[in-house]
Length: 152
Image 1 (tube, rainbow, N blue to C red):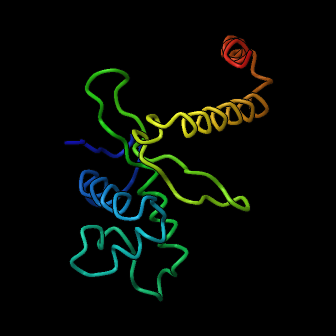
Image 2: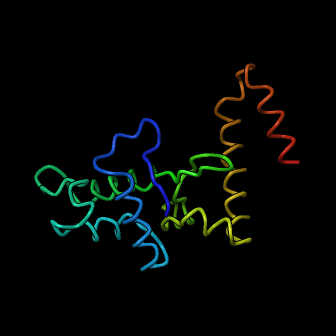
């Protein structure tokens, strides 16, 4: 059984285990996990994640609930007892017009060579963005040298 936990600093309502299992259920059902699908699956008052969302429309609109769903998805980690420890459970599955097209289970991505290459490409773009943002910090020179070595 997979053990889920909230990442450090996450301020989420409810159990990470329940949230992770519900996200995995939706992923198995749909082949993809989207914030909209998570909100829709949580509408019923007896749904596992119903209390994780704000349902009063005078307080929050649908877009806010979808934002909450993204927070849930992005805050889940899989506890890995061996290897590297906790890792993000669901990762972005691609973008269309600058918006996420959903999320994929990290274990599924790592088993698919093309998906792994897309993840590596995204990681390299993020490293370049990190360099642009923090390139003036001399204290990170060793980090940038390591990035250059990996990118070569």
